[in-house]
Length: 164
Image (tube, rainbow, N blue to C red; front, side):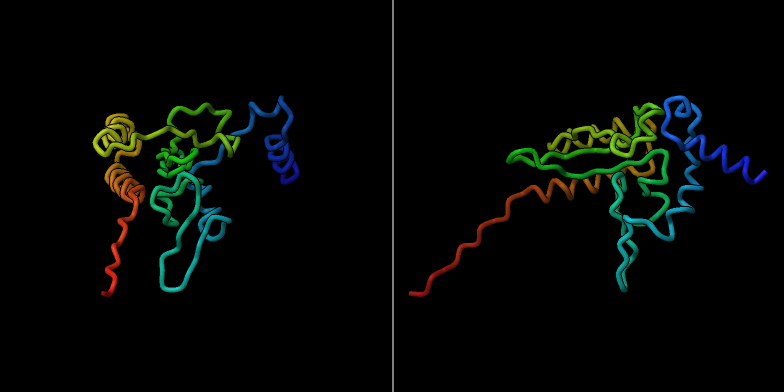
């Protein structure tokens, strides 16, 4: 039976077009158990919590609640530079086809978020709160939106008084 089980797994993981319809994603709990001890996105340091650089990790903490790899509903806020301007981007698995879940590059579709604080927070409320998409992370997403908006501000120039 051991060889039959291995053969079934190999058939499910092959890249032929006939086997794609049989390929299934693993449950979130199993994925977390696989990646919680070691993965390429972990950032460990002394006297600090373990951080994570996963795409789709809202807080950057290495935790199952925020994981972008092991959650079926991942949420992430980040910035992207387009030309001279910086753009706020929200990554969710909101409207994603099953075929995209097998492709890491297109697993987290990106949505633009408004830079105006009231409009941006209303947009987050609409997607996450009223849309019932991770309403538990809504206050954290709003706080991160505020911090990202604060990072867009230009630093004040300091006037140095000359000696006479």
